[in-house]
Image (cartoon, helix red, strand yellow):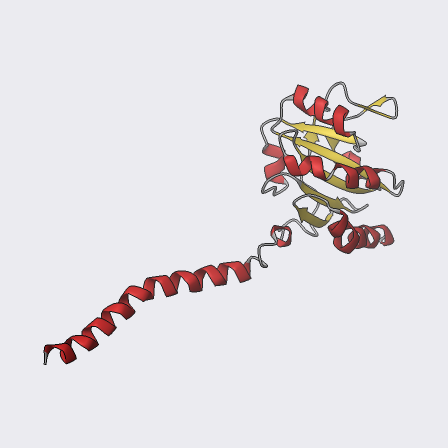
Length: 196
């Protein structure tokens, strides 16, 4: 007789043991869906449509492009030009991977590339650009990371598209790849170029 009365208790106990696991799996599924199936580049930016943050970064000394010293980064850099601002560091592996795409973009005379070197040792940053190439027309040093915080940077690499009006038009979290350049960043650049 005790076997039949214990069966409902065992069933309830098993259900109670499974509830935390089911709750965890439900929350994990919700987080996965809300984060866009793990696509970190879809994280929205509150700065879209806003003026680029006040930026005044010194140049990375000893860096040249086309035989001329590369200037630092100020808001004057953005005046009248469509600009891609790439936040990078020498210690960032994805930053190395995106150099071929940045180099390709730097050859497009309709836009300019500017770099923010994030929390990096100057010697390491120079070695990085000398080894992988310098796509930047302007490159500012953000030694303490304060300017990057103002830009809303989560981590490196990140790339911002600034229109001729000095407003941020688009933000890409993660490395510039051939795929996201073709599907997302390239069309966003064309939209920015089409605006007066």
